[in-house]
Amino acid sequence: MHWNEIVTTVLLSLGCVISFSGSYGVIKLPDFYARLHAAGKTDSLAQLLIFLGLVFVTPDLLTQIKLLLVAMVLLITAPTATHAITKAAHLDGLRPWTKSERGGRP
Amino acid sequence: MNAVVLIDTLLLLLVTVSAIAIIEVRSLYSSAMLTGVYSLLMALVWVNMHSMDVAFTEAAVGGGISTILLIGTLVHVGREEKPLKKRLHVPALIFTALTGAALIYGTLDMPRFGDPAAPIHHYRVPEMLAQTVGFVNKTPGKQPAPEGFDAQQYRTFDGRVKDIPADPTDTAWRENSPLRTEGLLIPTVPYQHDAHAEPGHHLHPPDDFNGHVPNSVTSLLAAYRGYDTMFETTVIFTAGVSLILLLRRPRREGYLQKGAPLGDQVILRVVTKMSIPFILIFGFYVITHGELGPGGGFQGGVILATAFILYALIFGRPALYRIVPPPVSDVLTGVGVLVYSGTGAACMLLGGKFLDYAFLNTASPGDGEALGMTLVEYGVGITVSMVMLTIFNQLAEEQSK
Image (cartoon, rainbow over all chains, first blue to last red; front, side, top):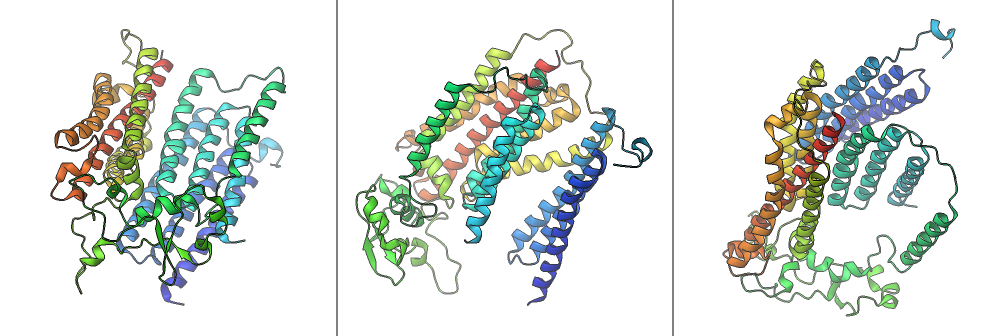
């Protein structure tokens, strides 16, 4: 196994783990903001790791640059989208979930 | 079961689930978002089939702009679906079941998924592989078909040349086709540029595009069935015009005085200002690159429109109207169709048939084709983006009444 394949395997596995934990969090976490927090990790970190992993096995320089550009665009736009949704919910008057409000149970 | 079939099955299952969810969900917002999900899943299905152009269009049009327009419509009609009085409408059910059964019956005659012996692989793909779609009509000014090319033949794995039956509907031959076991649809002539290759030199065709643009999908869309694409553009143009006629009202005083709805959101403002140039560049890239790779006027036009819509969402429509006033977008809607048909007319003036792009550069027909297709794609792109912008503007204008 060449070194770049090892790097790719590690990065892709990490990306998959974060992606999975993100989707698990969307199902399991108690309220809107916490769920969005989990989904935001999938959008930003997981995609970055997966794209970086793909860069190392792509032979073509132009494709590598394109992959990095896509990763960068997503790195800027995905958190912005998460921010916009959260802000909209906040302005709409959605209160974050707190332990005291529901007797300590989600 | 191989990986492609497995992924396809999973994706189509998800597509079905989201389709059922779209019908069942009461909240229309969820329904609109689910249509976006549906389109993205379909785009993945098409990527799996290696039809990048279709996947791109589905992602840009279905997943992108139609979701925006659907949500814009929801502002007028309300968030919740009205509960139905009667859950089951028997005649409708019977009609739907019959239509579905007829469609399924129709698919029985179709070739199996990925069948190498399907008619399309005999009668069109060999020509596309040999880049000879345009050679079929022997118009002067076009390059002649390569020596020895015969679209009715194919080459087996071991290099023998065999005949394809002349009848495309010969299903019996298809069932027992040697293509399934020993065949490969390699054209019976080598690529033209192979003959011009010199040792140690980059393969360079006689003209830059070997008599044809590299993306065979664009070649089919813009040249082989160019009339079709032209009238598709006209349909979009007509949609835009009828929308203007039906929905546009005379302006009242102060219709532009409404402030920017999201102008005080610093992060959104900054990111929008940062990303709009890139969206525009990408849109133009997709339009211009249409004859070289996946992309084209429809996708690129939609991407250009999203840049304007994003600007209007963040900075308000007054700011958008300062950049693209409604009269300008109205005129540009028509200009796109004019560019398309004008390219066709230019080909006629230069001695060819309507939309016979090779005549735009008779010294190098491939370059002529590329030039003509780029012009045509720009025509499509202008019309599509401006019509999308008009639809958005009309929806937003109604809403701010």
